[in-house]
Amino acid sequence: MANDLKQLALDGGAPIFPEGPPAWPRADDDVRAALLAAYEDGSWGKYDAQHVAELCAELTKLHHVEHALACCSGTFAVELALRGVKVRPGDEVILAGYDFPGNFRAVEAIGARAVLVDIEPHTWCLAVEQVEAAISPETKAVLVSHLHGGVADMERLVALCRARGIAVVEDACQSPGSEVQGRVAGTWGDVGVLSFGGSKLLTAGRGGAIVTNDAQIAQRAKIACERGNNAFPLSELQAAVLCPQLRRLPVDNALRLANATRLRMLTAALPGLIPVTSPPERGSSGYYKFAWSYAPATLDGAPRESFVAAMQAEGVAIGAGFRSFVGRSATRCRRVGNLPHSREAAEATVLLHHPVLLSSTETVDRVVLALRKVLTALQ
Ligand SMILES: Cc1ncc(COP(=O)(O)O)c(C=O)c1O
Image 1: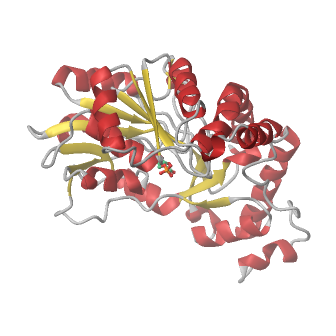
Image 2: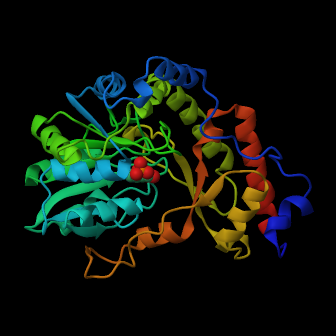
Image 3: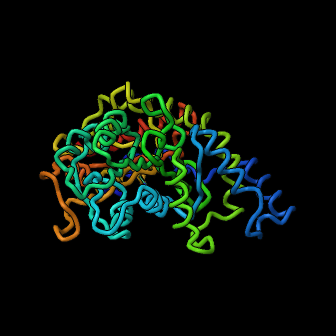
């Protein structure tokens, strides 16, 4: 095994992607036209023009809901969603032990308490069967994310929570426009959350939104967002560049799904990598990232950092996953069980960034080649 794995590409010949990973955001004539139009009509510098309203109208159409509210980030949209379902200080919010770090903080920002349950080992999403044991008289909401190409079991979660009067906040920041159990991601819960951050499938550099059918949730979130003077807005210019991306989302999601399916198939037999897999009846995820669990036992114990560094040397945008909340102190949260799958996800997850999934099958095959090359060298 090579000692300095950053040298692997050199030792093993030229990198598979000498040009490096594809840029994000990508070149986009529709976005360029939107930017120029916003310059020409002055909407780029206005408090209020037509773009935010147009974006929200498009979001309601895409999600088949009555209300959409745009704001400054996905992280803040999670907080707005929690406020929308009336989470108050002292309430409990159940979420997965492995999730986006900001989601834990959004619960804390309200003065509520996070209650951690484990994830499913294959989908990386909250395990619904754990939720029942987590419910207490203080439980106000469950916050659930579709993560890393995995799909949460929303149908079962919503049925469980409805029966107990508990709200569901569905975080679709990683899977906008994807199909979950026959509905658009974000529309199973009482309120759904989207992100328009700089690495996301829909990007404006920053930004987020909530979608809901409930007028009272929408109104409470709007009041919290405006705080007297639209304190946490999405700008007109951000909305202007999102509108054309939103129109193309179904086509882009279909291409990402086809390439992710190919990637899963071609890497199934590789040693050391176990891909995220959801039962087919759950539908498809949006593939903001494609995840594997990295299992070094089959690879001479080579640590995850070595694998990631070697893949990056091949020009592939791969990184480690989230750190998980399992180590958070008991003063900050309540844990249900030992959360073994959340612990494992924190230690073992590797994530392929999505831009490569908008490329050709030939490019996907080159990613497989790079994986094969690196894994062979690590054995
Ligand atoms: C699942 C999930 N929720 C929320 C967010 C927060 O979005 P933002 O970066 O727009 O604040 C992210 C961002 O990566 C995310 O992955």
